[in-house]
Image 1: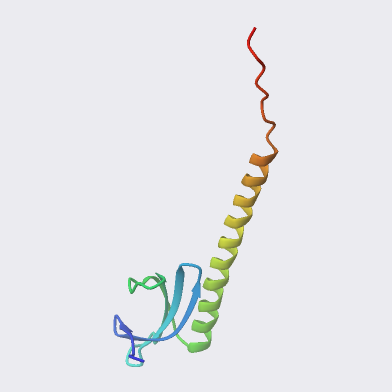
Image 2 (image 1 turned 30 degrees about the vertical axis):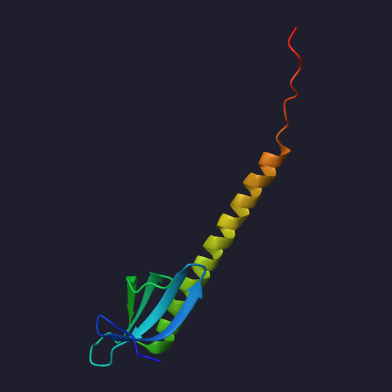
Amino acid sequence: MEQEIHAGYMITDRLTVGNTEFVIGQRKEVPVQFVTWKCRKGEKGYFWGHYLDDRLTALEDLCNRSLAEIHELKSLRQEQASRETAARQLPTKKHEPER
């Protein structure tokens, strides 16, 4: 497998949640050696970097960002289910013949 490099950081870890991916990048020759980024699944346009000093903190951040995305997706799914349930419970108007 080919190593992926972004902004000089080698991508070492990746978690996918729905259509979103979170990655860890590592670059040994800089003071802040680790970064976590977000991107759309299958794309390489990384954004919202969190720059961190050590690997354990980077792993924690990767997991926390992924969990936040999971909670967001679950919340959206629950909202959609609630709307669908409410729509099904709306009374239907019976059309009476005109006189």
